[in-house]
Length: 267
Image 1 (tube, rainbow, N blue to C red):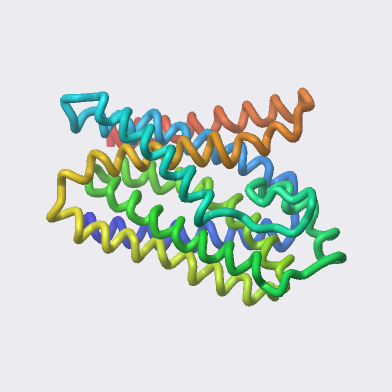
Image 2 (image 1 turned 90 degrees about the vertical axis):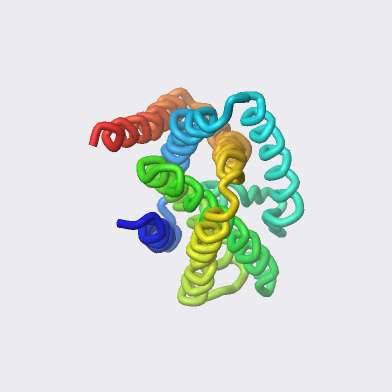
């Protein structure tokens, strides 16, 4: 397949797959499933960043400090964007909307006490549309370097999108949206991944010098999401059995990315 075909397929398949899995999890409110997926997603993100994306970025430059500086700047950028654009608004006193599993535990109480007339839901959709657009750019960048890197990056993005979108479904339902409307809004938002991927493909053909810094930003995005948004939620379950499960699933996520990379490298 051509590079553009890979980008389109990965963007569409990734968006639809993550959306369907998230909807199943959210509509059935299986907290245990969601928390397990969060742990696996952390491993997949860190594995993709440190085992695939960063090594590729280092190979494309004679000055490794350029890559590390890009990653540092990227982490700061994503912190600022999260403050300004991806802020999860919630009217519950104990709500921590970046923790999808926590969102599931408060769903029943939220539905009993409030609807916010769609305000939280609309902010979720705006933030996710931007987030999905950036994911599309990262997928396109990875595929334009190497098909193997593109596939691994897509898997990592899908892995973290499932628990994130499941939490978003819960917030949309709490905001007063019906299940059908919540699904349709998330579906439209997921199409931003395809738009970002196709635009990046045509733009990067004329600006190849942007590929290496974009790989650095991709790594920063994965590291930031894993360390800032996902890992803090795991600390809410400090019990030894929960910790063992979390570490095991994180290692499983890292291992799956490592195995995937080696499989395609020797294919």
